[in-house]
Amino acid sequence: ELELDKFCTHRVSFKDINKAFDLMLSGQGIRCIISMED
Image (cartoon, rainbow, N blue to C red):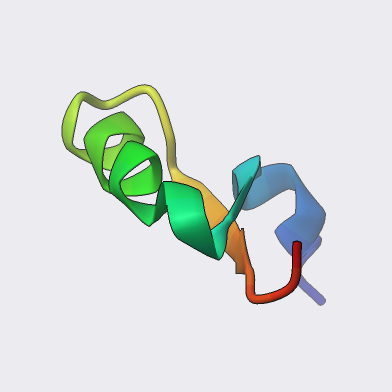
């Protein structure tokens, strides 16, 4: 069984989705969780 919470590095709202892509492309984030609600 995998502990997936360890791989979630950031949580961002949908309006900040570009920040999530920037984090992943720069290597600062492994997996960002996008919240569809504010």
